[in-house]
Length: 251
Image (cartoon, rainbow, N blue to C red; front, side, top):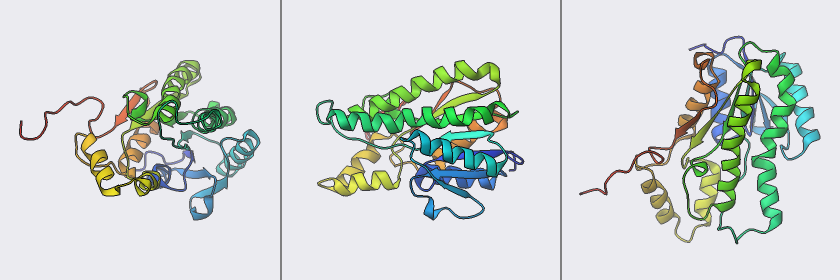
């Protein structure tokens, strides 16, 4: 497919995991793609890599300006950069709450704010935010992370309403547990990594972790001109976790 031929895309957190899978798929489908990441050293041509910290406004503005100049504009913005947190509401101090919200929520604000002048000039403008199943389902030991992703979900809807008449579509994807480096690090820290992985797999009705490529496919669909009628939508890519209630096996 070449449905992105002639279009440009910017992906934050695009050097690894879901972001890298998304950048690679956009590239394969014809887009000219730039990646923003804390460490873009693994990004090589034809992808364009730019160092940026989404928690720092000056860093974001500089990187977005550089990417837009190199690309000749921005048609698609994928706000994928994020960070994780574990624990109940009492397990993280104020500094950690501020840190996670600064990256997961304000990071989207900063990047979108910098990209909006370019998006307004596009005939195929689309923003896709990486949200989470944690925004719509209560998960144990994820209070801070869930709060941040709940804010991303609400922000997506508000942005979609604000910019629909400017021709800018805004959607989000809500992944379940994905087999990414971040999840791998969580598993490594568990007392019994194998048992923890089995529990995460069993939590999703499909009985397995999702792949980054599966989430990237959903992001790219929402970003594509073929989804021109879709805005203000949260697309769950969660192995059935949100909507299905299968009986236990053998019953």
